[in-house]
Amino acid sequence: MQEIIALLPQLHYRQRALAAYSWFFYGPVLVQPAYRGLGLLQQLFWASQQTLAGQYELGIAFIAKENASSLRLHTHKLGLEVIGEHVFGGNTYALLVFPVGEAEAMPNTSTSG
Image (cartoon, rainbow, N blue to C red):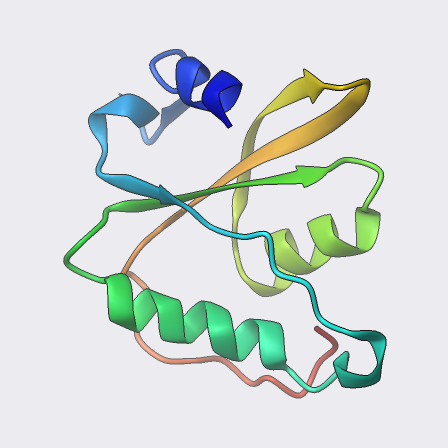
């Protein structure tokens, strides 16, 4: 994580360096196979949005690029934005961000996650 923190002054979201935001690391979140598809990740994500609103401006996550299903879920269902990549230990990770507290209501959670 220290390597990612060192990148924050160089990465930008909405024309502002990530280091200039109040931020936190989101994840990792692991859902056992028997509980996937119940919307648990979405519920946890939106609950964290409500809880952390006013405390942080931005959430930062990193997901292994080889984990296409997680990347798709986080970008398409939860709205995280890929802002860069980082290679660590021979693996490439997508770096993602999301604004905290901009979501007004939890969307339908009947999809997988």
